[in-house]
Amino acid sequence: MKPPRALRPFAHREYRVLIAALAVSIFGSGMWAVAMVYQVLALGGGPLELSVVATAMGGGLIAFLLAGGVAADRFPQRQLIIAVEAVNLAAVGSVAVLAALGWLQLWHLAVGAFLLGMGAAFFFPAYSAILPRILPPEDLLAANGMEGSLRPLLQQAAGPAAAGIVVAALSPPHAVAGVAASHLVAFVALNFLRRTPPAAGGEPSTGAEGTDGEQPAVARPSVLHELREGVSYTVRTPWLMWTLLWACISVLFIMGPIEVLLPFVVRDQLGGDSAMFGFLLATMGVAGAVASLATASFRLPRRYLSVMLAAWGIGAIPLAFVGAMDQFWQLATVLAVFGATGSVGMVIWGTLLQRRVPPHLLGRVSSLDFFVSLALMPVSMALAGPIAEVVPLWVIFAVAGGVCPVMAVVAVIAARMPSDELAHPLDSREAAPDADAPAGADVAGERPA
Image (cartoon, rainbow, N blue to C red; front, side, top):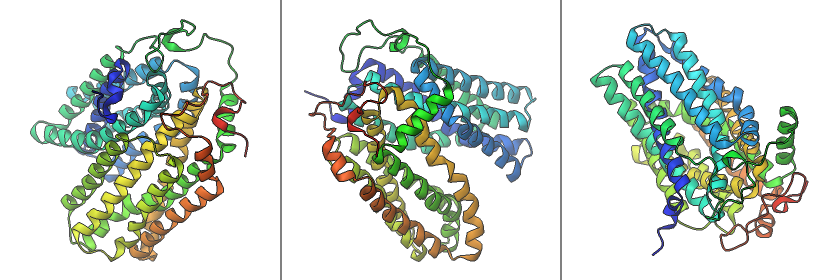
């Protein structure tokens, strides 16, 4: 009897090791989000100091995202992931030791946060690039769905809850020590990854690869050249370019209202407090986790591009009515729909990158995806407050809920996605595209627009 589709990746040893390490690391990241806040407060810091530490982490992520993509394509992903976890352990471990000794200062926390952000910039492109090496194509959707389920449950719920309990029962330094322990466990687990993993699908290794399953070392072009190659591929691949454009515009219009203005909606329209706001965010996270797992339980849709953009576009529409809501269940329903549809799209999107982007470009394209998606997030958050001073909240949410579906339709039409997805079927019953074709070849049917 075959296991459920969502659990099939666990049949592969390398995936079991990787996802176990990722789960522990994600849990530690969730703990850090709370431990860092209360450690800043314990040092006498306020909103300004907390902002500096949080900005340092975001700065490390943005500054190194593109470099992380190039690194994922130039170096063995196994070694890169292990190195990142070692840096995470060193950064948080140092903060924990300094806190235990009473020597910790705010700038230590900022440096530690910067290193964690830098680590994330290198980890996720490498993680995206290594999955197709250890899993057959038909299991990638399930693997991405599993990650999409673990992240909100561990990073947004279990990790912060555990840190809060430790801080309340003991102290912030104890919570930081818990974060360090999580990264230690993840680091040890990652070292159980084989240096030369078997080929995806279980076929024996041909022996042609170097260590970590990589091709033998050859002269490589410059980092700038490789970055240009990744950008060029993205620009000349319509479904990829237009999806990233949609993401960029959507982040600009949506993230600020949700992250900055939603607490005021809860306070002014619902008469709620921070507990209600926390429950609303938890509702969105749980809905996203359930939707990710559900998506992983089925085959990739035949109309995968259309379904992905439809999920994202339709899921944003309820946001347009936030300004008229005065009941908890109404806003909870909106956020649940937004979280669920967002996760459906993200699971499909991650699978598309791994199925249709050539392996030698996957790290760079993944990093461009993160970079474009995150680049305007600070701008959105910076603009939301000042705009709310002169524009009613209901207008801001109405625009956010209206722009995203319109842009989704524009992206589908401009990139000719309906004809593209039929020309390049990715159902597991179809032959997988030639992802190993050399640069410049017609890979998975991709031609300059």
